[in-house]
Length: 405
Ligand code: LLP
Figure 1: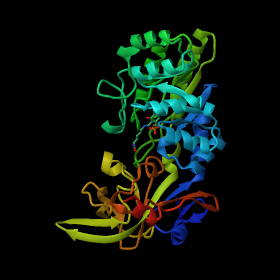
Figure 2: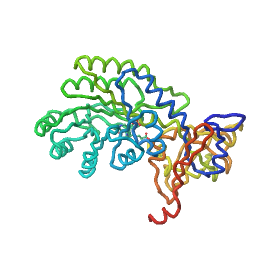
Figure 3: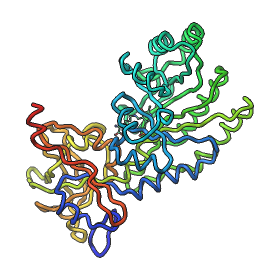
Figure 4: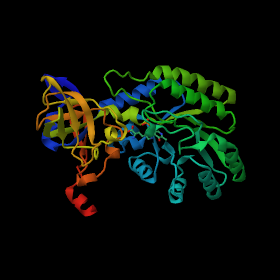
């Protein structure tokens, strides 16, 4: 989003014009940002056998999946549904990697049937896979007792975590692998999402590579996702180049030791799509009491749950009042929940009823976590590329909601 002559634009298009045509609330994505982020990762990570598997759960709109595919991305999925969407978007099974905790047998059957590479998450999954598909290649997801994330809810490793095969189970896994002649061709570790310090990511990579010496048939090392983005104005972009140097050294020495080039997989979700997306909403009401001002907008935790769920920070911009003085307000949603708050005591330029407010960095875990809670339609989604505006998902028709109750 940029400002030109006091008006806010995405690509070459004035946001107010998009809202005029498609209404609000509305998710708008800037194609250029996704292209830049993908190319930045691809260009800065120098290890030559890098494979980027976009984590589809971050935003599963098939138009964005097609865009990422055209840029050279592969995908990581956590369900049959996301696998099917990826296939629909044109990914080949060989470009998909699957991980899921607590997966149902039927889902594993589907993944097996499509010949999608799994990173299995438990002893039971390996046993089931081996029984059904002896002699096949599997990856495994490990929990090496390391976890990190922007919130405890997004930390996915350590003794309190349900994810992955715990380090204490490796012996057991090897026994099952032998029993069914399975081949462990990949090791995966995803320690969490929104990792605040890239050094933690490096430490986790070291730990995974250290344990990889216990596995002889590896074809890939998968470091998962977790790269953060600067949500607050004072936050810095992750130093991908710095991270790349460490990973490059680790992977190159591993490949040299083994006398073969191992693939390096990463599974970024947030990093690729978060900054491309804004959620635009309209101010519907303002209340002032007890020294507080509550500015209500026509969206809420039903459309973007991150602030309610993790107290996540999103920059807020009153795009109707680029020049007015700021005042401190609470920006709240229109859902019947006290946690439906986007910001408390935040400076926003003089919000008035009917103004349009942009909630920034909403491209990841925004629409994909939205719901029909409170009987309100999900917003439409728009993709902007320079001077082109494309409706990539309709607003949920109210009839759909009425039928689902
Ligand atoms: N790989 C696996 C196995 C994952 O579970 C995830 C995210 C990713 C990759 C991608 O992680 P990312 O690069 O996006 O950090 N709803 C939360 C984030 C939950 C992430 C779940 N797993 C949020 O809004 O912050």
